[in-house]
View 1: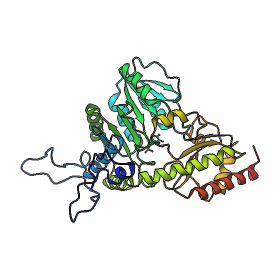
View 2: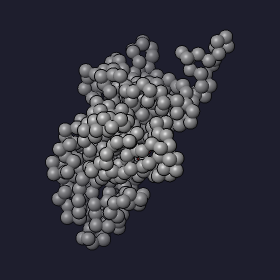
View 3: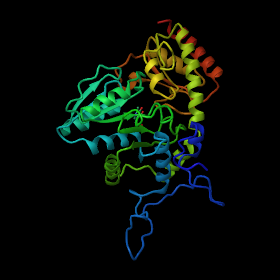
Length: 385
Ligand SMILES: Cc1ncc(COP(=O)(O)O)c(C=O)c1O
């Protein structure tokens, strides 16, 4: 077996082997989930740093998964990962363990809406100044800013920002830089190599990809930051369960395969959408005519299988989803099954007909034919505009 830091291998090899223990005859490839609240203590010494003691701070299934994710985020080594019960738990841990009253934070105005809501409802009342900037810019001065949180590609609009140059500017102003790496996954983008201090993500989406668990993580090459978020987790208890950590680790092995199919499907779907008369606009950073194409090609290792497009109205989206046999109405993304979400229904400041489409691992010809027929059906049912 390839050990934790298999930096010389390709993505498929690294995903399949990440975090697995050395081969031991008679032992499984991935040891089973450890489900424990307390562990036995040594009655002579009591708690010991080299022994698991209590389930809010210690779990071998998390540690294996954390080794795997850290290996994917930073193949050259030097990074630590701390897993959480969900992406929001990881984001909250990052923000609340690092920010103090009087600090300022810069957030994407077009990124995941719950992060903005968290900042407005939890950080501002606590005395933190929250400044929003669109992912594509312009950005404010980072002077006096404690934390810059970027999200690239931004969800749902899929604008991409130049992480390396923003991280350099933020660092020279003395700010900590975190990147929400949910949409690309660590196989699509390595924020730490681009100059960020922290890669924070939801593992609920493509990272684990089976629509059956929630997970989050913070990955950093700064030991003091890792210590701060780990301590936060131990004190506040936003931990993943042992079963979920194991299931996530098992799912990681197919990440390269799943992403490859999802991106191929998105490429084919985006080409069809760009030609369909009902579609008013299409965003897919993998298309040469997309405003984010150049920076995505320069910065990302692969483009995720997500396409954002706009239909004339909410009724057109409803009709399309009703007619489709393969695309589920669902608010998550990155899963095995294609799904679509009309983002305005969640409060995003986007047109009512804007759809974030997550391409699954179905066959491209089936998916394109299904969506094309569903769009034709929507046009017939609701009208051409
Ligand atoms: C970009 C981004 N970050 C964070 C999250 C939060 O993740 P979770 O749902 O696992 O809490 C999401 C969820 O959709 C997301 O899209």
